[in-house]
Length: 163
Image (cartoon, one colour):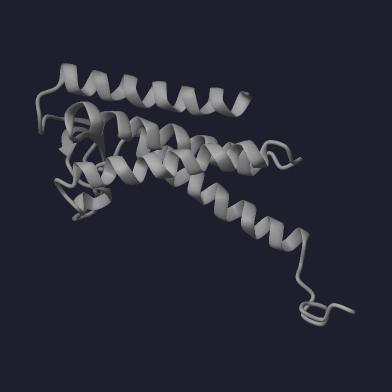
């Protein structure tokens, strides 16, 4: 149950921050947090990461529905193991996916507001849900690497089953 609570908290933080941005800032308004390096910028995204597949609302709704169902199914499966990292990772991805999913269903666009600039390079503006998804995927990759280290494949025995 704790993993669903983590997903719900991620969802609530995401939706709360998006509400604050959408209700208290006008579109394109910027608030410098750390000079020009980190700004809160009111932005809307009708596509996926980096604005790709813009205006494909139904595509995102269908794909996200399938992904959320898959994550819940897999989360149920891995919660029965001793692994704690993978369910945590899946919880973050689930909370983030549902956060952006709700935006797309209700308004057809996602509220983004976290902007980082590295010199003249402006990193695409993102939100808490995006952060949860990226951190969750990073933890899934880390869990996979740790699992490979814990359970190395022996090339001498793989595929050589005795009859």
